[in-house]
Image 1 (cartoon, rainbow, N blue to C red):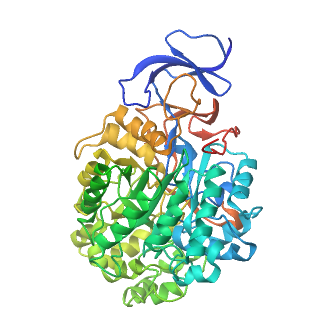
Image 2: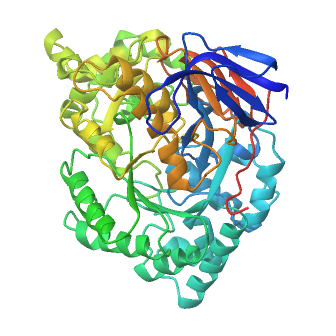
Image 3: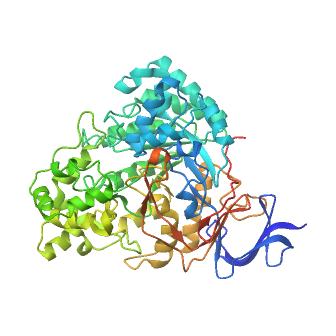
Length: 586
């Protein structure tokens, strides 16, 4: 047998956490055909000498639901070794949908996930109504990497309940039966699971609550039961446990989450986990309740991130510290270069710094209340604002914060922030780790990642495009945690690879990927681990209708293969489009 391709001389990590070994890998017809020290001839060869070879990475938490319908490349995930991305997280998506509700779902995604509504409106062709039709449309699109879709709560609720869905009305028994039937239909068409969102931070572009945010136990369990009896499926949820409205609501909200997790007939369940400054011990409560669920037979997991859950602030971004000042609001619509020129005028600077910021959130605004809270407490917030640098450093000490620098320089925090956003001709980005950085280090992040119920997630690939670029998590885990970290313990490279591959494939029930074994898909990364690293995030305008988004490039990826074809060679995207829609249960 002549192989299509072989990878030679690499240090092979099997994905299961075992010790790596030197071996060659042979590929035939998109599958791994041989692994050993001496394999057959091949039409092509990739030299992996000095590199590590891993299974392709999986991402269980992305938001490419709209982008996947027009974009064949799916950056930034493809640049960071991801070969299978699961979208449809947090209850927001685009199917099922009636023609009259297109704009309503766009406003949901725009508000919740910070994806420009004009880009969605121009990019999506809406050649579907039902979820099976949506999957058919996705299947027709060529792409670099594989995708899988969760069916999402918000569009199903709108599809069934119409205007009642967006006015926080409880679903009737008939409504719930219809939502359950639609979910079952989607699962039988190959959806990987069902997701819901229950957080006050998520708002539509008009500032309204999301349809699913206050769903009752009866509704959630009714929908979750659609997975009962199927051979596949996961449940996913995000919740802030009503902290904005009731700081003592944790147990009652977790009771709702628990009932939802139990409703699917034993399917895996995952809940987002992070440390919040305003409830610094809540993550420990989530772990405690999740451990009790696990001990009672529920396959409960929590999705964790390998660094702070943060946002970028800057003149090009969705948010920045000066956007609530009246003088800035008068020039906010001008091109960047014009704004920078105006802001460099000393008189304009003095006038702006003398002003009191106005409220951003409120009725009719998509800005979350957190935006006002941050500006009102800027002296405190500035103690967690950092420059990343050309070699991005996400775990910096307190003395590096812009607030600390302002104090050392004898200037006001506002002046320091003003000068910082003007750096690099107004393209400078300030990093603000909102979550997971309460103690100004990653010791709690490490505890989360090491918990046996934890799975790596929360990258939000394709979402929050004007504020976040966390689709780079895989590169960060392998470079920082598995090689560079000096402020505390590291994670062994073989364990880091396992977290990105077999752990996630097992959670999703994808038995054909996530490991380097003969007969499995040839989704493979060849990585120069010593050179692996991140470049600074950058803003680009490449979305439909001129929409902009943050991208973050990586270095060190000699090759990323999807189905045996290289979609990345030497860090650059190729013309190959072997990615497929994963239909579970087929």
